[in-house]
Length: 130
Image (tube, rainbow, N blue to C red; front, side):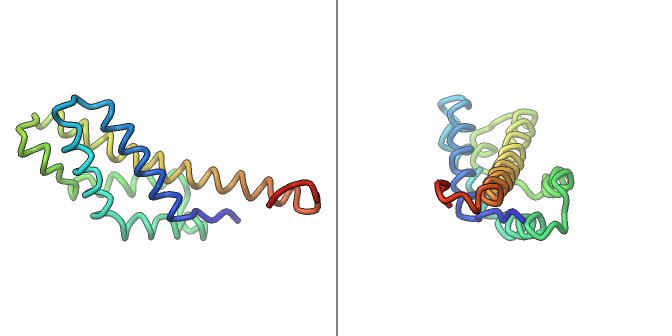
């Protein structure tokens, strides 16, 4: 059974935040990065719980969207809001942050799934590195 490595997941989230902030207007880039980090801090316990649920197969991959969506109202992009970013744009950026969370969690899950399948497939192959 695949196990998501939390350290790997949070590294993936850092990469996704950098990608997201690089696609944002230069004047808001650092604020978005900081707000995204705050969202991850806010949701860390939930993320850990969701990862544990995925690892133990207590939640299905498709349920992740609903779990993330439930957190939408808890997300405050305070730095961007204080810069006067329009509410519609804040909603779009919230969507981007939720999407990056989902993408990072699912990418980590799938990577570990495929890695485990390959390890099991080649476990008796002495030329295969584990």
